[in-house]
Length: 179
Length: 194
Image (cartoon, rainbow over all chains, first blue to last red; front, side, top):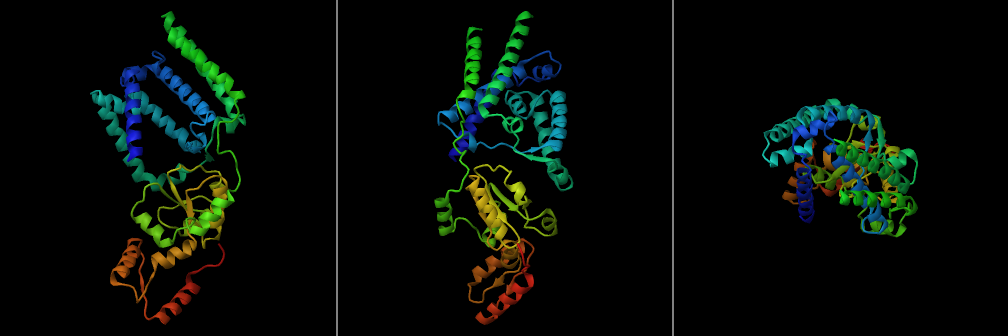
């Protein structure tokens, strides 16, 4: 019960943050794909930076145990195909699963349509699962992380990602200021 | 803008110091916690009976993950419903969420028990194994012997569980028949090896 309350609280905070960033607005999301609007990238990069630094330093200061975090396993080929399908749906509807909830909550009919499609898709895949299971489980790579892939210490990866993310954010800020 | 710049510089500083801060993970020590293993074996929290597992599957216990550690060929031949196939070499590469209950089984239990120790050494403490493996599943769930001296409610419960998984219980006679029956079917259904 306690877990449910915590999850509910985090969910509300997440939705609120997405709405504040304006990500319940489909044209804004689609704008990212046409490189017209960099809001999505800004939100993603700052969220990644905050979470990554939070987990790293939180673990270092003994406030949490990064080893207890669940890293989803990589199935290269099915996830590539899934990513393409997901991206196609994303740019067509201008919403992703999380932002479709936000859009619905702020009364946008696009949100309802996207969520309906989402559940229909989940149901279809569930029904077709016996047929697609061999593909679903193909090319397994276990829980793949950048540090495991590049064989670098965790801290070095954190530094590299920070440099890349901060320079991209700085570049976006400069670009927006120039307009 | 000032605040944004400050946040950016702060993030950069935290990120650049990270390589010199050491490892953040506490669960890096890979070794056997022999005390906790001995305790789990002593109090029986290391294993679960086939019948208990059947009840968990039927009741759709949240977070339950049934894992068959045999080869894919054996898995396709016959397996416990809802199980997924993770042979031992793949098992140790997998990650498990802390709130999952992992149930390991093999043909007769030895390999599952070994897999349990391997997972323990990797810090996975939420795993259990089925001591008699698939053989126990067949004997205790698919064709359980209904003990003659059990109460009717108990017999109905066993029979119902068996029917749920498409099995059919055998009716036990007197105590002696029961023992004879058990050894006989034991010879028939148990395959050697694990």
